Image 1 (tube, rainbow, N blue to C red):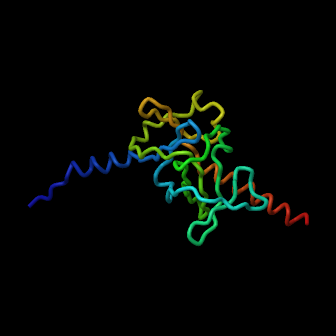
Image 2 (tube, rainbow, N blue to C red):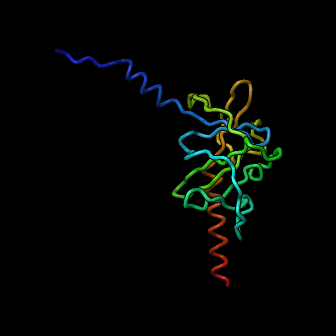
Image 3 (cartoon, rainbow, N blue to C red):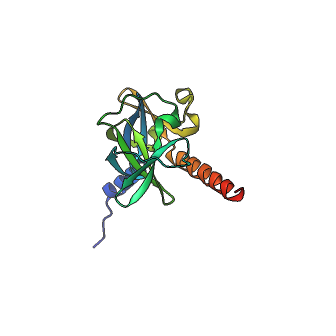
Length: 171
């Protein structure tokens, strides 16, 4: 008996390869998106402890289970005005090359499924954000910026390592 191949399963795999899910969130009144696979977890904000010699984008550290994680103030990184802190404020925990950071956002709105082809190249809409934005989305009549979170994390890590190395050498 001849084995049949399912066209449906091939189509589904092909479609899934072209799709991604993003988490939509706000910093101030600006809408951003991040690939859901890049977010380890989202938690309520909690008290941020001061940490010495921190990067200018880092507000301090927060303890999550047995780890101390730097809290990145995205409003400072992106030069965006924010509202007063509220219960909607969240920390998005990200991990890149075994380095974890908590991105402080004002509100997480929803998860959105889209095709990679829906992401437009940054243009005039991303003016002032270009170095931290990898793409632009149009969702429900709003513009959402795909943040290049890996670049932000690597910038913070590399600048911090350079400062620490400099201090060690010239003490």
